Length: 356
Image 1 (cartoon, rainbow, N blue to C red):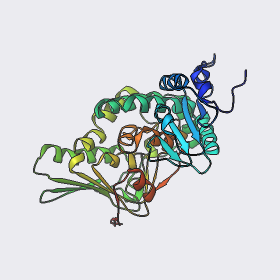
Image 2 (cartoon, one colour):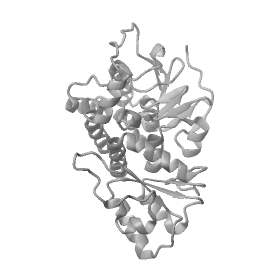
Image 3 (cartoon, rainbow, N blue to C red):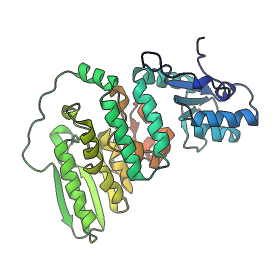
């Protein structure tokens, strides 16, 4: 029986999204389903059942409405992974779209290209929103390591081809300066747009450790030299981990997400240029994020068969909610500083003037 293009609330309540998600060969069937919130009337009993079904569904569920989410349907919209609407109505579970149906179809096409990553993303976001930050980071990293061994990432690696060894560079990858009670950390790989390499990660964590151990550090400022604050993970290092278990432990125990979160009340991140992947996932942990007017932010991991792995499934939902986080990953679309400010991904817009 062919599946409908989209489900009604009644269809969802009746279990239409709960059909077997795995084919006999292990491939995923219909990773993302669309729920039309405007289609057909619904009783309180059906609505309650639809909410329950949505919370336990294995698939990504995207709601659509040509208006705003009505008060009666807020509980359902919050149970879904995302709702596309003409107006958000001030709800974090809704994303404004000029054509919600077309936008939902575009998200479904993206999910069908990387179905494992799309499903894992939804699972991680649902689980992580109720966990403390440290445990949520563990969940993200375990899922990320799983996807590194998956077919989506393998296809991306094969299409990318061989990469040369990352070039060595003299000098500090992170410049650490102290001005009275302020510790200033500057990412300093401008020739690589401050790509988040192992060396840069280790140097950043070492700098953050100073503030963690010294209570006289009243403020920490994090910024970057060159054209961009951070262009994301260093692509030359992608796919080089031989032991994914150790990679998980290094990512969580030796990564920057934990100390950034621990220092959030003292930390200001000043970002500029193209902030991609880790380049926005990490500064989002800061208590205050200031963006240059020309800053552009993007989460591109889905096209690699992955989910955010530098803490983005944890830092983003605590700023903009899991629903808008899901939208940024599923769409892969860049957002402007003004858009990020309206959502709360950044806290202010002002010129950020880095060194060349």
